[in-house]
Length: 537
Image 1 (cartoon, rainbow, N blue to C red):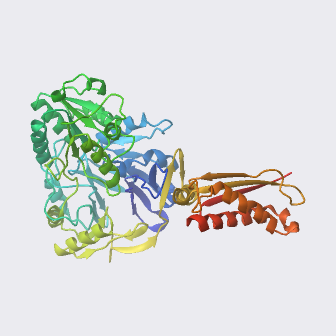
Image 2 (tube, rainbow, N blue to C red):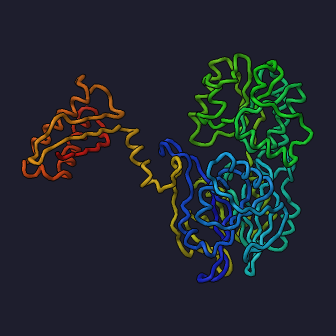
Image 3 (cartoon, one colour):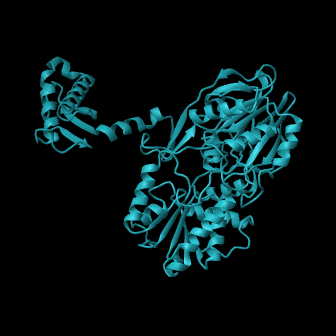
C-alpha cells in the first residue's frame, strides 16, 4: 500500500507529486474485503496543487489503487512502458475502470513535472523496469530508491545502473528514502541468473509433469521457466489470467523474443506428462487461483497426480502461510513432489539484504537516511545499518508524518496529516468503520440473531414473533434448541416491561436485544449481534 507524497515550495503555494499508489490485501481480520486502499484525504485537500502521480514500477502494492483512487484526483500519471502496458491490459479486466491519461517515460529519462526536476534511474527488482527517482531541487537532491536490489543479471531489462548512481552521488545526495524489506537479513540476495540455473536443474530431473507457481509480474522468472522447458524438450502451458496478461504484455514489448510460443490450458490435457511445464497462478494460496483449484481437484481442465512436481518459485507473504500450507498438504497427499526455495535455488527476493544496502549507502553517501517500506523491525534494522556506515542523520517517519527534508536542520517532522485505510468491499470503497466489516467480524466470531415482534397500540404482542439465527449452534449446553431459548426470552422480556412503556419501540427493541444476548451468553459463552424490529398494528 505504498504511497509517498513529495512537496516543494512555501506552505501557502506548495506543489505536490505523488510517488506510487498501491494496494494491500485483506487478511482474516477484514472478512469479505477485497482490497485495502490508502486513505487519501490529505491528498484530496491539496488536489489543486497536485501536479501528477509517478509510478516507480508495476507491482500491485505500488500501482494497484490507481483505478479506484485516480477519479478523486484526476491528474496526469507517469509510468514506464511495461507498467503502462500492464495497466492498460488490467483495465480490460475491470468493468467500468476509468481511462487514465498516462505519459510513458523511459528508464534514464529526466523531465520536469510541475516544479519537480526528476530523473528515473534503472534499478533491479523482480519485474521489468523498476526505477529509483532522483529529485533535483534548489535546496538539494533527494533519492527515492523504490524497490531495488543489486543484480547485474536480472534476466529481463536493464540491470541496476550503478554507474549512473555513482554519477549522481558526485552531484551530492542530501537525503535517501530507501527500501527496508530485507534490512534484517545478512548477506546479499541471489541473482535471477542463479534462479534460472536452479530452475533448469529441477526441471531437468523431473520425470513427469512440472508446474511452477510464481508472482505473475516476474517476467524474468517466466523467461527462465520457458528456457528450462525448451532445454528439456517441454512446452509451457499458461494457467491463470494474471500470468497470461503479463505474458501478452511482455511479448508485445519484445521481452520474450526468441522463445517458443506459450500454450493455452487446453493443450495441457493432450501433452505427454514429460513434455509439459505449467506456469500457474496462486503462489499465495488464493482460493480462486488455478493452483488451489488443481490442488483440491476443482479445475475443469487440469489435474496433477503422483510423481508430478510443483515448484513454488515465490515467497509466502506473511499471513498467507495457512492457505499455502493447505495447498501444499493437498498436493503431497496426492503424491505430488513439492519444491520450495528451502530445497533448491528456485526463488530470490527482489529486495536487497544488508551487504547490498551498505554498498549503496557507501556509493550514494547521503547526509540523511529515511528508512521506509517495511514494518517496525525492518525500519529499525535499516536505521542501525545506515548509522553503521556513517550516515550522519537517520529518521524513521510514521505514516502521516510530513517531514521537511531540505533545507536547514533536516529532517524534521513539521506536521501530521490524516492517515489510515479504506477498504474495497465489492464495488464500494469505504472507511472500515462504515463498511460493515466490523459487524461482519463480530458475526464471524459469535453469529447473529434477528428478532421481529408485532405489537398493538396497547402494548400487547400480536401473533407469533419471528426469530432467525445465523452462525449459532443448533443446541445449547442443555440440549435445548437455541431458537427455543431465544423465543422464550422474547416473550418474557416484553411481559416484564410496564404496559405504558411498551409504546416506546426503541425501549422494547433494546430490552429484547439485551435479554437475547444475555441468555445466549449464559448458555454458550458468546454474545451474538442482535437486531430487533418492532412493528405496530
